[in-house]
Image (tube, rainbow, N blue to C red; front, side, top):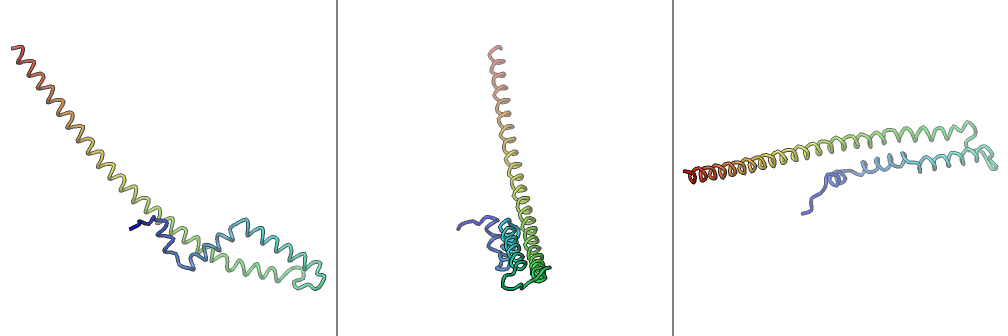
Length: 142
């Protein structure tokens, strides 16, 4: 069985709406969106200022303002949904990191105890050997 990473589990838990709001937020928060929207606005204004055939949205471009207002009215809550989900994901990831760090700390402490025990056993053996050598030297001199 393949073990999923935390990120893979999170991605799998997202609903269609979650993915859609993330895509919209990513799209609207990009230079691509800004550039294309600017081009459309400039073309819109030029076509309505010179209006060779007819002006569908004469100056002060009330229809364009209505479109921007509608876009902002929908974009704000969609972006907030995406940000809220990002905050929740960040909190879960921080909790996961904390849990991992706690487990690593416990393992390090257990290893340190084992190393200390081995060190004490080595020192005890050395002391025992020194005592045997000392007793052997004392017996030879007597």
